[in-house]
Amino acid sequence: MTTSGPGQTYGGSSVGGGPTYQSTVDDSREAAVASVLGPEQTAKLVSEVREDLSVFDGIVDKARALIARYPQSRSALLPMLHLVQSVQGYVSQAGIQFCARELELAPAEVSAVATFYTMYKRKPCGEHLVSICTNTLCAALGGDDIYKTVREHLGEPGKPLGHEETVGTPGEPGSITVEHAECLAACDLGPVLQVNYEFYDNQTPEKAVELVDALRRGEKPAPSRGAPLTDFKDVSLQLAGFFERESDVDGPSAAAETLAGAQLASDRGWTAPAMPAKVEFPDLEKK
Ligand code: FES
Image 1 (cartoon, rainbow, N blue to C red):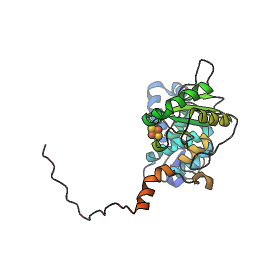
Image 2 (cartoon, protein in one colour):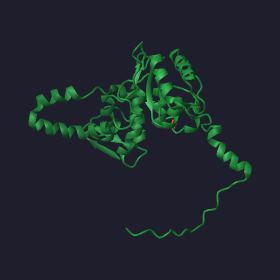
Image 3 (cartoon, helix red, strand yellow):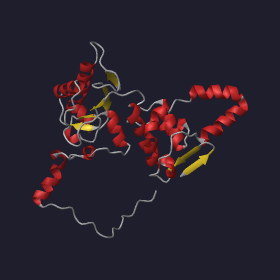
């Protein structure tokens, strides 16, 4: 979709255009406000709430390429949020306004989505995001101990690091944000943790401390499986759908434990019964 008006052109067909444009949505809102407050007060108000979006100039082409993938621009919102996160390491107020401008949405609509999903961080994130599973199975296998130990180890004496708190300066090398996570879909390998969504399986408090110490030193220990470790901003770009290197999608992600059932069935020649072409559904009890 392409929308154009005074001073703006954006949408699928304008990919590659310059970053200087103004949203019709903003213009019409400004006009409505100006009719009540007058031009001077409106200009002051707008300058107070409008963020400087120039930090995103380098991703305008990528944003427009994303938008062009969908019949309706608003469908690109989730990858767009990952994209702005790849620039600043979180979804800032400026990031919300950038998404709103590109997608012709109200900032409140973007904000509602950004605050719903835990993968979008509202505070600057560390170079690495460490997510420790404390859901039922991992918790019972030691996940709670791992979370407690890591928080205490990275925090100050008597003041463990809290959920989504960062040790070090966010974005700087060796900085780490810690969070507790719900089931990470690797229960057969629990307790697990992730660094930038890469898996570290079968953890113990000791192994987790060794891992975060290595991250603090600037090292990038290899995950148990999947692609090599990068950093939170880089992985946000991948989640937006941009893979800059072949290694971004490299590495087997399945574990032997996950495939054990399929391997056993294969060794014993077990197969699932063929699905009949037509299946009669049983009568349902009338309500
Ligand atoms: S409970 Fe931790 S991965 Fe499922």
